[in-house]
Image: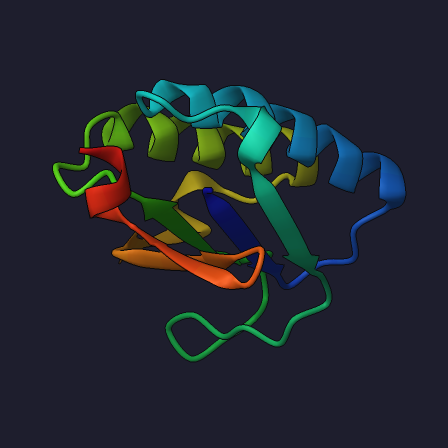
Length: 120
């Protein structure tokens, strides 16, 4: 299950959240074997972010956590699509969108651990 957590320095409307969620849902399919059907998204708006000592323009810090993609296949395309979504919907300049990638080795769901060996 992929998880994308977005922290943005601006206020987001419900419509903007939905639009970004829809765009992230399409973008996650750029990673082989991933789809919106399993995507978990979270948004934190009005988050206090400072870049180069200031906060005079909107900033986004996004964490993308993906299970079983240790070769990072599709990441360039995914990161480009994420950056485009936040620029198009919230007007955040691409050079102010920072994306952190986390490899997930083990997920816990339904009260049990699922690891990569379950998919080999």
